[in-house]
Amino acid sequence: MPDELDRLTTLYQIAQTINSSLDLGEVLDMVMDRVIEVTGAERGFLMLMDEAGQLDFKTARRMDRADVEEPTFQVSRGIVEQVAQTGQALLATDAQFDERLSSRASILFLGVHSILCVPLRVKDRAIGLVYVDSRLHANSFDRDDLQMLETFASQAAIAIDNAQKYTELQTLYRTVREKERMEQELRLAHGIQARLLPQRIPQVPGWEFAAAWQPAREVGGDFYDFIPASDEHWGLFIADVADKGVPAALFMAMARGLLWASRATVHSPAQALAQTNRHLEANAAPGMFITACYAILDVTTGLVTYANAGHNHPLLAHANGTVSRLGVCDTALAVLADCGYQEQQVTLRPGEALVLYTDGVTDAVDAAGARFGLDRLTGAVAQAGGAAAVTRRIVQSVDEFSADATPFDDLTLVVVSRDAG
Image (tube, rainbow, N blue to C red; front, side):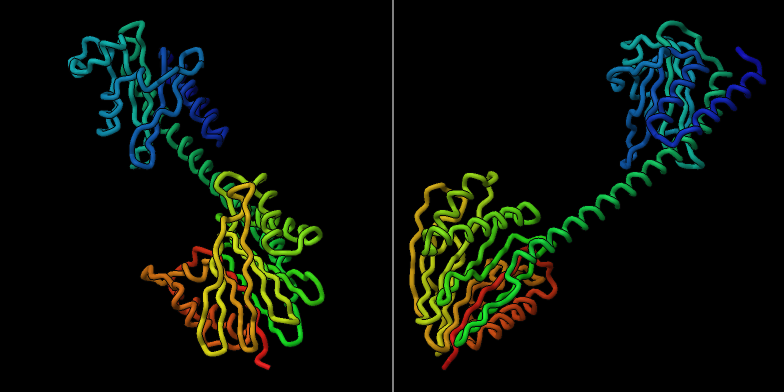
C-alpha cells in the first residue's frame, strides 16, 4: 500500500480530475473509475438518491472501465440500504464469513468476498453512496482503504453535487428557452390565424354584420368567414375543429382554402360542404374532424340558404322577441368521404337576426362547473337589436357568467341582422 504522502498525492490528483468537469455523467464515471483504481476493486457501483429518497444506480464499472450490465442484480440491496439508512460506512474483509452479513443470501449467491460501501454526503445531506467489491479474493480491502475511500467520498460528493446543480440549471435553461420558443411560435401562429379571419366586416345597405372570436389558447380551433359570392350574395361560414392548438389551426386553414376554392365550381352551401369534405377526409389525421355551418344570404330578398355539417343549430331572433332553432344537422366534415348535405332555407325579415355560434358559447362554465347552456344564449339573443349589439350582449353574458373560470374552449360568433326598416 502506498504511504501517507502517496495517499495525499493521489487524493489531490483525484480531486483535480473529478472537479475538472461539470458534466454529471462524466463526473460519475470519473469518480467510479478512480475509486476502483485506488482501492484495487474488481467492480464499483455509484448510487444517488432520487427525489423520493430512493437509491438509483447511476454508474456501474469494472476495473477495465467497462460498464457492468444489469447492476441492480449485482449487489446486495440490504447492504446499500443499511449504509444509506445509518450513514455509516461498511467494510467486510470476507463477506462469506462475516457474521454481520450472514443473513444476506445475495452475498452467498453473488460470491462476493471483500466489500467497501461508503455514503456520499454534502454537509449533513445524504446524496448517495459508493460501493466496491471483489469476488476474487478475501482481504482485498483494509482499514486504510476504508479511510481513503471515506476521504475521497467527501470530495466526490461535492463534485457530484456541483455537477447535479449545474445539470439542473442547464435543464432549467433549456426548458425556459424551449418555452420561450414555443410561445414565440404560438404568437406567430396566432397572428397568422388572425390574419386569415376577415379583416373587414361587410358593409351592406339595409344589413348589419358582426363577429366575435376568442380562442381559449394562443391558437384556436374555431374559425369564421364572410365570403363574397356575388354583389347580392354573401357567404357566412363558421366552423370548429375537434382539437386545439397549432394542428387544429392548420387543419382549419386547409378547410378555409378548400371552401374558398369551391366557389369557382359550385354555387350552393350543400355542394360546397360536400366538395370541401371530400378533400378534408382524404387528408385528415385520425380522430380529427370539423363541424361547420355554411349559409349564403341574398341581401336583396333576405333569403338564407344554409347547410349544417354537425354544427350547432343556428338561431333566428324574431322581431317579436321569440327565437327559433334552425334546420337539421348532418355529418361533420372529414368523417366520411362521400357525405351528402341537406340544404335548408329561411327568410330574414326586417328586424330579425341570424346567429351562428360554436359550442364555446354554450359549453362555457362558471366556477362551480355549471354550463352557460342554450337557454342563457337564447335569452341573450331574444333581446334583439342589430348584429353588433347582439354579438356584444352574448359575449358579455358569457364573460360575466364564467368570470371566475378558466376558458377551456374557443368562443366564436357570426351574426347578421336586417334593418327594421
